Length: 231
Image (cartoon, rainbow, N blue to C red; front, side, top):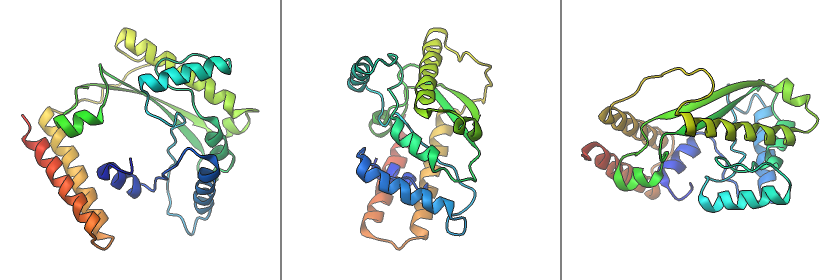
């Protein structure tokens, strides 16, 4: 993420933390950020915290490692998601600011091959044409009353795996669906290109121009041009 300038830019503007998957290092980052969030005068309101307990994109290699770990720890075998990392989740839940009152649990499934960054940068297109999203709202009070949040998180990922298994078999989510419509191929490219361009302008407006930011603008220009004129 830090290497791909477009994604890095998006992450920086959202206030994302770049973790190293080393708890000695990551705990300090989390502690400082959560302390900042608890200081209402210092941290802008409102805000949200996005976490990805898996810690990795799912690949065949990561899936095999996840299965091995599950067998060693007597955990359920998950085929469509990875075994979640519970330490960071528990830490955030324990030190969560009082202004956050609920957790929104997203389970996202993709048609066919899913979203692939390689398609975006090399083909200027996505093979995936449909995305399914399941959303659950969970009050934080409910999680605070659970003896071991790690067990809850593990059980929740088992449910996610079941949802994605159902989607793969029936081409729909098990719960009620709402069709949010779709964009044409050209509309989708244009909207996402504008999104990137606006981000670039804002980022350079609030900061002094530097060489690496000019490189980012050029990269955006090349990719946007490829997208809009790709047949």
